[in-house]
Length: 112
Ligand code: 5GP
Ligand code: ZN
Image (cartoon, rainbow, N blue to C red; front, top):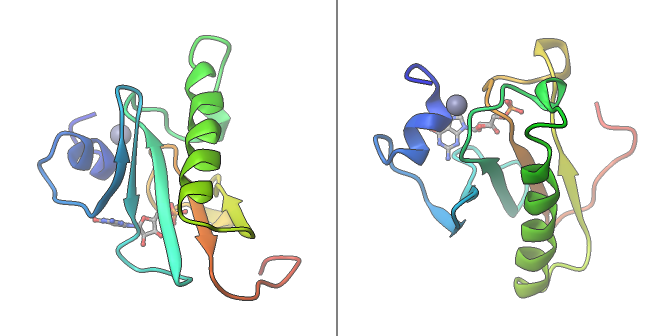
C-alpha cells in the first residue's frame, strides 16, 4: 500500500534498524522503544491488523511466530511479551499488522 508507513519501510523508502528479514517478514527495532528490547515483526504483504487475518493469508502469522521464537532464543531472552494492538482504542497507530516483542524489564498485568 503506497500510503502505509510499514510498507515504505519494507520497500526501503524509510530506513529501519533491521533485526531480521526473509521472504515473508521483516523485524526491526521500534523507533520509540517501550522496553530495553522492543522490536516489531511484520509481514511483507500488507495486512491491516489481526482483524484482517483469513484462511488465505494466515500462514505468514505462523511463520512470524516461528521467527519470534528463533530471534528471542538467539538473543537469550527467557521472558518476553508479544503484543498486537487492534484498532485505535487498543492503541494501534500503524495499520499494517505487526507484533511487538518486548523484553528486559518487569511488566505489569493486565496491560494498561
Ligand atoms: P502500534 O501503536 O500500532 O501498536 O505500534 C506501532 C509502533 O510503530 C509504535 O510502537 C511506534 O513507536 C512504531 N513506529 C512508528 N513509526 C515508526 C518508524 O518510522 N520506524 C520504526 N522503527 N518504528 C516506528
Ligand atoms: Zn502496509
